[in-house]
Image (cartoon, rainbow, N blue to C red; front, side, top):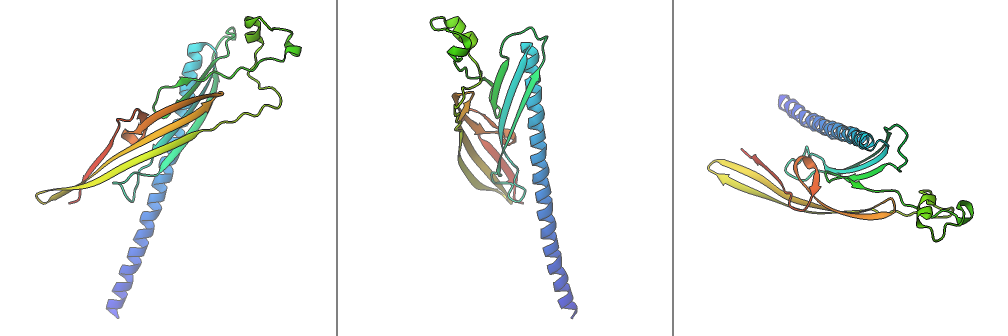
Length: 222
């Protein structure tokens, strides 16, 4: 009878322990996701504020970040891929600048690129006959698409991952090493123009320009 009770207690402990580990794993992943989303929001706002102040005008800043989350259950494997997107619009100026402002787009840790809004020809009947006068045509152009215009935006993101796990034994110590590459190919449409990016996974689960970045992890199995 006593042995049966001990076996039952051990089984209950194993089940309860597994549930506790699973709950902590979920909380860690969820809190990490919220933390990265908040960080992306703050970085986007600060970048927009800096651009607006430098231009003495308005600034529109969009940042899209892909992150490899940490894998709690399998730390020697690539974690889940998450995306975080945020936009900020800031005006900082004296109101005397007549330019359209600054428009920026940033993907991951790459440099931000200029994405000026697409210009649409003004209606000749409303703006007057401007044919043959390039300067007047540019002045009368608008960023508002004509009625009936359908704008499409096709954004594609493709990941190519290769990972190798090796075991190295030195004496009584066995080391497990992860070597992984993750190439992100992105084709993005912004303000009516198409842009292409090639980035790779590096430190901190972030993506950096180029294909030379590599993720390496090693731990002792002792």
